[in-house]
Structures are given as structure tokens and as C-alpha cells.
Image 1 (cartoon, rainbow, N blue to C red):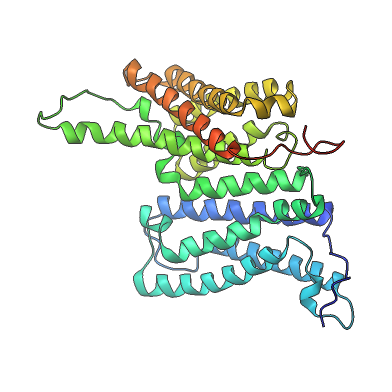
Image 2: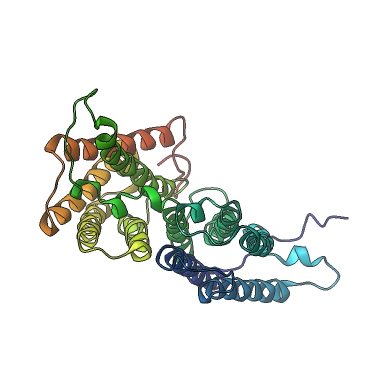
Length: 354
């Protein structure tokens, strides 16, 4: 018989934070393993120091979960009842990660070691990524369970959870990152349609423009999520998201001077945006969300372009690089509009509405 009167178990802020700190271990190990796949093509075995870093992180996280659940146990009740609210997905993620690891071992033994883009889209690696998504999202799920109905409070563990999830997205989308590609620094020769070599000349800048749109969505999507049920976004969130999307992929792919200068410019612009956002109340931000996200995107990419220009110069014509900024701002505004479409306001401290 189900004990419906039993109180819901909460992990607490400290346990949430420890879980997310272990998540840092897991995410950094993922990027370290990605670095090895890109820079050491002669890898021929599953048993590498980089895999050891990743799977030891899994063991440590599993041991921590076992400790948390064991401490919550009540004699006479199923052990599953001892899992804190928001941690059910974490347990599933750990089990799925272990299964995916065995499948990944079999995959590598049968088909070999991936050395490039194929490593990011390998089915076993994608399954590992989904498992990590469940594990790294613990802080958000736990904070939402603790908040209950009403406004959602962004705890430090929840902010760290969102940052790690964004970093995980940046890992699996590194092949279309505007911080890694730095398209405006690449030479571009406009070639008329129908002339010889048109397709070859247009492909790199077309991919570059697409990378700006994808990277913009990767930054703006989590930013908009911070307003989902919350009165205002966490302070410094734009800088945190830009740093995760820019610097982790750069560390994995290689710290080229021009790319570093672009990332530094974008990060500085995000800091300025955060300072401006901190001066405005949550209701004001919510009412102007499409404009806010458009300006944020424009800030970030203008900062990147300034960094690129100072480091090596911009090779794109003004119509291209300015168009990339405008298109990115448009994507950011469209995402904000869709996220706020047909939604109600977040309850304030005194009742419904704000």
C-alpha cells in the first residue's frame, strides 16, 4: 500500500551543490576526452586516461548518490522512497551511463575509435550525452521541487546545473560553434551565381552564418529558461553562459589567438550586458524580453567581432558580418517571443501577477 501521507524528501542545498560539483568533474572529463579524439588520432583503445577520468567521475557520482539515498532510508520502506525529489532522473542517468559505457566499449572494439566529427554523432556517445544530461540537470530539478508552486528560486546549485547543461550542449555542437569557426576571420571572395567555383566559395561563409545562428540559440535558450517560473534571471547569467559556450569548446579544439581574442571580446560584452541587466527589475525585463535578448545577442557578437578585428582583422565584407549580427539578434528575439507566447506572469510575493 502506498503511503500517500509520507513527506517528500529534499536533498538540501549542500547535497545539491556537491552533486553539481561532481558534475563539473564529469563535464571536464568529457571535454578532455573530446580533446584526445581531436588531437591524438592514433588512439586505438577504449582504455585511455581520458576515459578513466570520465568513468571515475561516474563512479564517484554513483557513490555519492548511494550515500545520499542510504542516509535517507527508513526501515520498512522501499529504498526507492529514499531518493530525494529531483534525484530520480539522476539515478536513471547513472544507470543509463553505465549501460552506455558498456555499449561504447563494444562499439569501439568492433568498429574502432572515432577521430573527428564521427565521435560527436556516434550513437553510444549520444546515449552517454543523454545520460549526462539527466545527471547534470539534478540541481535544477531539485530546486524546482523545493520551490513548489509559485516563483522558482535560482539556487547556486541550480545555476551551476544550467551552466553545465549549456556546456554539454556546446560540446555536442562544437562542429557548428561560431567561437571555434570564427568565420569573419576567414577570407571570402564574393562569386556570382552561375560562375565557376560559386558553390565552393559560398559554402564556408554559409556555414559560418549558420554557426552564428546555432550558437546564438545555444546561449539565448538557457537565458530564457532562467525566466521560466523565476522573478528575474540570476545575476551574471549572460557571462556564465557565454563563457561555457565559448571557452570550453576553444580549450577542446585549440586556443588559437584569433579565436581567443574573439571569445574574450564576447565575454567582455556579456559582462557589460549583465551589469545593465542587474540594474533592471524582473517585471521590466519580462515585458521587454524580445528586445533584451536581441540586444544581448548583438552585444556578444559585436564584442567577438571587435576581438577578431584587433587580433587579425575581419575578412568578411561589412554586409556579411553586420548581417550575421542582425540575423543573430533576430533569432534571439524570435526565441524570446515564442517563449513568452501565451504564458502567464510569475506570481509575486504578494499573490498572482507581478
